[in-house]
Image (cartoon, rainbow, N blue to C red):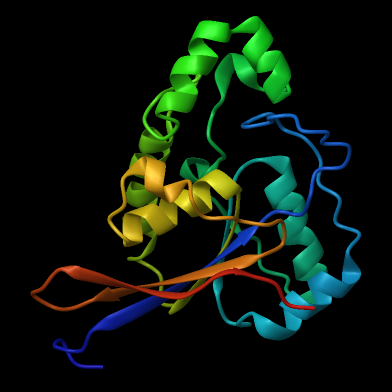
Length: 210
């Protein structure tokens, strides 16, 4: 690779395994367990994902548990980097509540939030716009300083929507249009052109491997 050759970093974003007994509750940054018993999907991911990638995980338990389960399926023994900025959106006082409970206990805040869900903040929480800011900073930092061309990130629906929104220059409300399933993969390539702006390429969204 010469100094004039673009460098492509392939980011494989993996949403954590499902949360048992979710029942429509918003967990945000609550540290709850994941159900990593879906061996078929984990084995499918293990067969598909690159083996020489840098592993990065959200600090939340459900992401770390998913990373450990996939590491077991892949025979991967490297400890992943923990990136605090890849934690799920902080929903503040709404965390642990159902949508009906949010509307009942915080009627005014709930109404305002759903008018502009990308830029409004839950009570004592953060907006998706703020999530996009911290995710973008972390992606730029982690795209440098490591020799691997691949990054596997164990993260959350809101974080992956933020990464997609950033790569496509979307407003936060538009980034919320993406569906992100548990144990699905979204690949976003970061292409750094020497002397030019960073370019982005979407390799796939919400992919599932069985």
